[in-house]
Amino acid sequence: MPRPVDKDARRQDVAAALFRIAAREGLGAVSMRTVAAEAGFSLGAVQRYFRSKDEMLRFALDLAVSANRERLAGIAAGSGRPAFPEALRQALLTFLPTDAQRLAEARIWIAFFAEAAVRPDFAEVVGELDTEARTRLRRVLTAAAEAGEVDQDLDPDAVAELVLVLIDGLLSAAARHRPGASLDPQRAAIDAAVAALTRGPGREA
Amino acid sequence: MPRPVDKDARRQDVAAALFRIAAREGLGAVSMRTVAAEAGFSLGAVQRYFRSKDEMLRFALDLAVSANRERLAGIAAGSGRPAFPEALRQALLTFLPTDAQRLAEARIWIAFFAEAAVRPDFAEVVGELDTEARTRLRRVLTAAAEAGEVDQDLDPDAVAELVLVLIDGLLSAAARHRPGASLDPQRAAIDAAVAALTRGPGREA
DNA sequence: AACGTATCGATACGATCGTATGCCAACGTG
DNA sequence: CACGTTGGCATACGATCGTATCGATACGTT
Image (cartoon, protein in one colour):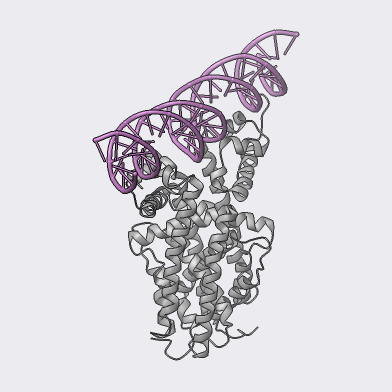
């Protein structure tokens, strides 16, 4: 094996370049050549790491899903430590475009979402993350409900679904966020959501 | 003026074809030629109605915005007739992909949303609709709050923002909806949201 | 030290893109 | 009735797309 190169590391570099382009100009601007140029590679090099554009996109999607899976795990794990309402609030706040990084992530997600609406293989991958999120959220919410930290009139599973929808909505709004605009309305919306869903002891903080 | 043709009607036909393609294969599959073929026109004919692809896309976006503006107006107008909670519930339910038409609309919206995240001119148009929706919702929610139909601990403006986020989330989920899947979870989420936000008399229907 | 192989860049190919141009048919006006 | 204007279509052009191929280079092994 002469001159071994860390293939996976290079693939990640290429994917990072793809993300930058997608966040800046959309998935429509992603081509083998533009990605290669952004990554500082030649077209041939990118072709060696990914046999086709489809393989490259799939790799990037998997990477993005993994990143959000970790964030999701953090949400689930963080529950129970502070009071549940505050944990939910903190979790939802992470979806706001508070910095360039989060804004980029939101834009990338929306781009992949739109693609998933039309490409079955993408839809499957995104759907798996969705299912996992649903499972985790239900567990957390059931536990919180038993602890009296969720409105007792609300079905925990329904609340879990609602939180999922909320996350999608926050991401959607985040992706279209304009640099100068304030995030306070969204913060207020999050607070209102948490307050509305949470009816156990200590709702008024 | 020889052989006059209804230009605007033709433009709408072309836009309808564009919507069909966007809903079926995404905005990436939209080209002058594919749209022309879908509409049953020649490339030259489409070029006569739209000087450029950009003009065609902008026209389609404006059309889509108008359609949702009307739906929005319906929501605002419908409030006060039945109890507000039920009106809100009905309004949110219209965003679920209950038939092929609604599913297509959701996919089209998501596609334009993703584009708006990256194209300032698109973002401006979508942003205007957003602002209008915010204004209308605030008015409705303030009135509902005064009527005691909204949780008195919640800021009406924050609730309005929350409903906006919810709509985005429902659209996002709707766009990724798979034909066979049930809509009951989303319906439950909507019910939970309405129940959580509504704390006036008659919340248990 | 020489070789073989893995890496890489350059280039080529067919397809498709947005756009521009020119010809044909059809109709209202003189 | 002839003409000129207008709608419509076929075609062409340069650019860019995804993909394939082919030398050149650099390194580990014998």
